Image 1 (tube, rainbow, N blue to C red):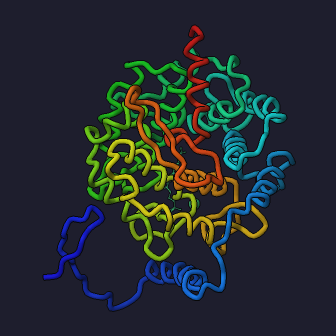
Image 2: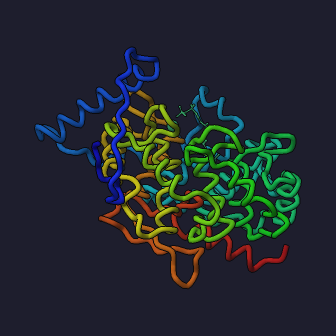
Image 3: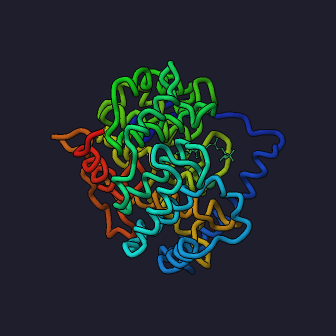
Length: 398
Ligand SMILES: CC(C)=CCC/C(C)=C/CC/C(C)=C/COP(=O)(O)OP(=O)(O)O
Ligand SMILES: [Zn+2]
């Protein structure tokens, strides 16, 4: 019998599976993706002919700033229901890159508030949607403007209208129910300080039911585990109760194993679900789970994933030559990937620990000279922004 050490230095039995007799579309795609990445790493790491690339900050700033300040080209009409998302991805990406956007804060905020004050739509005149509202309010948390224009009572009543009896939420009136909706609704309720026991009744139980036999969470109970939904579910559990208590709300060990298994051995980046390809945005959706668990179980610090391998993937494979960050080599950069790859890089550069005196706030310690701003691991904006917005709201009547 063969034995090996797992990452907690415990002996485990090695299981060997027979080699597949034939390739499948999945294995072919995986090989097509990993082979050029392996070859590229070999030129850097083995013969030393190239050095590890740095974050090309200037190029990424130009890419994001151009699109923040100019009219979007025609192909972007597909984003017509995602105006608040465009504002969030571009503003947050630039803030993470330490750009001072204060001269544009008022203009950005006036645009965002035009999407609604008691739930925001995807654009002017569109029905309110929790994902648009999450993105819009996170943008306002960054800018610090127009906070008094938010109708908190109206937002609360609207969130209650989206609540299902089983504790879950719909994305919009008559819309779909999933873990994204729960995360977005709770982020909105927390930042506006309108969380009540009525709003959150049964929600922990519903989220717990989304954890699958694999250890990750599906969008709804019995769905396939996917890191987009896993991030939403686990971050939502952290909003409902301190990250310290995560282990009483889910099978934490299974979750930890599932997260570790999402880091691909050649690429170093993450996939979002079993047997799928690496993608830069999972640096946040999968990688963002790591600090939440490290805050709950400090002894797991740097044992769940390799931050170094993820940084290699981000720096070597996600940077487009002319600026912007992307899913993988061969893909074009976009705002969504630019933001979430930078969020992942920020997680790599910092250690998060719960404060002993307040289990909802955390100390952030840089692990090295940071290239990007430290992110709030639950809300996805620079650390401290949500608490400032929440304190402002807590001092107002509603
Ligand atoms: C707050 C908020 C709105 C969060 C969104 C979370 C998120 C990213 C969910 C992902 C949903 C999903 C099943 C993608 C699969 O896409 P795919 O099949 O194209 O990708 P894959 O092959 O990598 O699984
Ligand atoms: Zn992606």
